[in-house]
Length: 245
Image 1 (tube, one colour):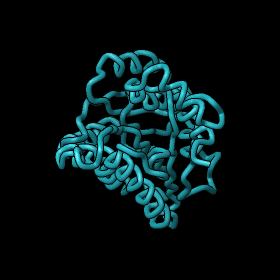
Image 2 (cartoon, rainbow, N blue to C red; image 1 turned 120 degrees about the vertical axis):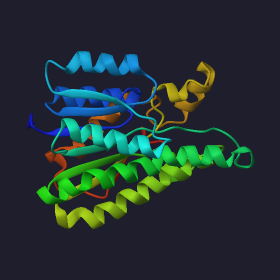
Image 3 (cartoon, rainbow, N blue to C red; image 1 turned 45 degrees about the horizontal axis):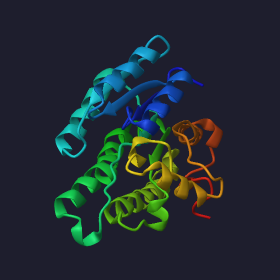
Image 4 (cartoon, helix red, strand yellow; image 1 turned 60 degrees about the vertical axis):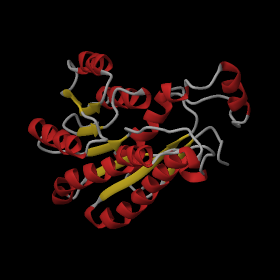
């Protein structure tokens, strides 16, 4: 791959995010990534990849709109052109609809859909000028089917799917491709709330009878960001072991 390409990856110190940062870096991309609380994990990624590519980590709390804008400014201070935007940063919330507060609903939407909207706006002008660029949004299988007790999460991830399709249609004439990956149950900290017994029961209901790995999702993201998917746009790729069939 072209070593001059630069990818911006949000949520870069999380399970899927860190796997994506490593994979893009190891495939020759310069990388700017955001993290919120895991400074140690972010620094570990920088230490691992800095000898291969230019890589920077930027702390940002995406529940605060001004920090999203500050993140973009810091990216532009280090990189002139952004070739790929990967929106991974996200949070879940598990509760009944009637017990989901307005504040929690807003927090989930701020991170899961408003931040990708702001970041897309920020990095689009350069892509449009160059008639080149890719955007990969990471939603969830619950954005497709909805999940009981996860109304805010499901709604925000469904919104991200709609946003992906709308942007794909709008930006195709500018040769910018926009796609979405919808992971199923992945071995990340997001599923630590489940006991081993519960995890076994969940896996039993997955046709492939196992959880996915962050590396498998990262591979799907890289494929959609790369020229290997040059005629693919507006697509929602389910990477869920067959869960939503």
